[in-house]
Length: 238
Image 1: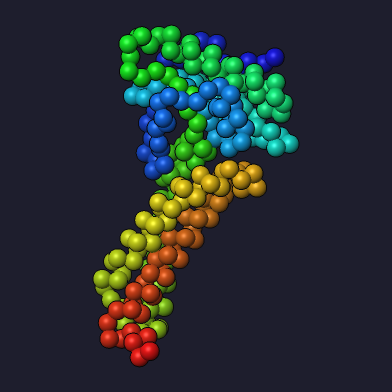
Image 2 (image 1 turned 180 degrees about the vertical axis):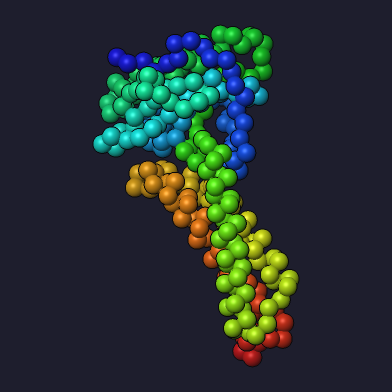
């Protein structure tokens, strides 16, 4: 049976990211069985991770075949190659094999950790959008462009409805629209990857969110705040 484990222990690399979604796992980590089940169910990656020291090895759900995750094991630094071991999680035996391999890799990494160390290597799951800072960077750029478009559209709509545009509203609304979209995306994406119909489209959904939501929220905020502020409020007669 194929074992997805590292043949030699790679030098630990500190896990760093400029992405807005990077979150460190609970330091008790996952069992091999929990990690295999979560990778099959949610996709993404399992890291052999030690807080403050980084990761040595990654189990990456690269694609799916008949709904089953195809896992590639590779060193944390760098992209998978055709020579890296692969395993399709299409049976209970395959998941058990992966669980055993992940625990073995974790234990080998911990063999070099002092017995009195406060932190040890654990198995930690990352959803797909958490695995690469590039998603966050591209999403931020798209969201900023969307916010600017929303600012322009909202200002035009506010002028057409009230024949005035307030500077304060034009300052506050883009901030509100951008931040609400930014912070709402993470929790919603975390829910979406648990739904099979959405899980494998999460990158596309993230792009659509960044294109549409910040601009819509900004435009709506401008119009709403303009309508409800000042003597020019058309609802004041009611």
